Image (cartoon, rainbow, N blue to C red; front, side, top):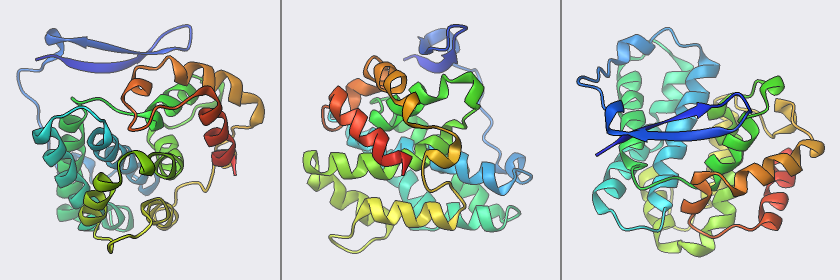
Length: 233
């Protein structure tokens, strides 16, 4: 087994570094350490955990234990409402506990890999002068990729709906956009400081990002261009 991390290199590229030497002897998951986290960071990091759970579940490779763990994390974060509760009341220890577990479970889930949300957010996050928050990028991009990917895995979307507490046939992307609004996430990438001129570099780097390979539906350069433009708002 090995553990990886994302490292931003001096040239701006984000690379995944994986090694068994990165495995800690002890990992402390203490939700009380997060009680002072401001709402905006609670929301952004929480949506990062949600994206880990959803994207790892949608990766086409077979790994039922990872799938089960990822869906359980999604149930905690959205189905039980922990993310919204933690944003609204940072002192809610039960919500903080559930979000700590959702974050942990999302990380266990993405042993399978991730997808195009992360490919695009990594590519945008390399723009040092923009100082873009990774989890917030994921939050804004996630609904657009959920619309793009649904045709590739409709049966998995039913399980995602169940984990999120949605009704049968509900629009998952719309539900995530509503959640983003409730927890104060930006409506689009333009509000984060990105514009159309940033697109070519972001698309170019997304196509070579490791997460690109794990997307539920193969994405082309044209697909990324359309998704990026839609996410600009």
